Figure 1 (spheres, helix red, strand yellow):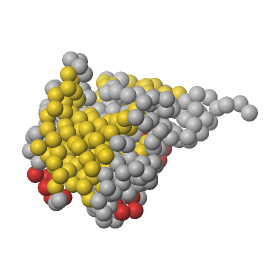
Figure 2: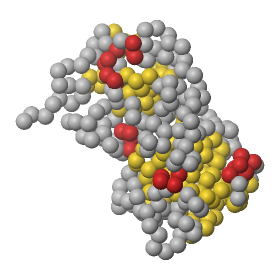
Figure 3: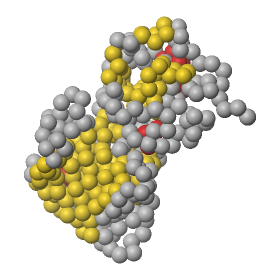
Figure 4: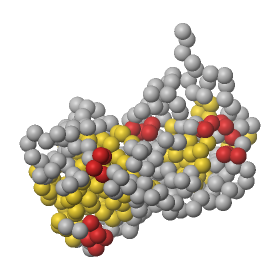
Length: 339
């Protein structure tokens, strides 16, 4: 049996941020048994997709709307479409020249970390048109590389995202790189015991951007938590603050630079933190002008602890009502969803 032809794509996004301006795509049209699109994503991508990938002033000639973008589907060349970068593909349609919705973000249809109730599905693209404010976390775990991470957005607890990690299993650490909606709450779970050492990097956060996270740990765990700024160019790390325990969830909102709170809800097994960027970021930089802002958690975990998956105790208790923080931009013309 012959293998179907390699998918035709004009430009493919990978890593990023990739900035595409003033491009014309001509005669991209699907062929029988061969996926064709002007814009697409790297195949079998274990790494990441930057939410600041962006396009401006794109024109199409003899390209049906159905062939403007393709996020992929399981099958030849795409395999199972289940690598971490495949699951998190996204780009910003700055002026709406691709989707007809200025300011929108185009994301994989089943990425519920980015979706909200007003997103518009485009089945031909296997994608959705969404509005929002997005950034990334790098969740780096030490002394283990084979944990599978589950991250859940609190307003869609029935749609978790599973990540295997971006690095090979032979390394001494692992890194998970989800794209997240800002100003939302999340919980994070593992398929074995939670890692004893974990660092969260705030990536593509602007000053004042925040998220809340609840990380699952075994009961009886104790914590040491600090924040720092790591300047990779100068190879310097500066401690910027500590987290102290509070017995009230509301106190998470009362942190000040240098002194924040953590809330350990032992009944559910969730360690709650509010993570807020303290420094300005240049437009296409991953980290702030002072360096990468990080939160480092060291956990003293009881021996013989089991699997650290707190989903059953987290929800519906910490579920939130889905909301739309950024209204969808006005459709500029006849949109992709209307074709």
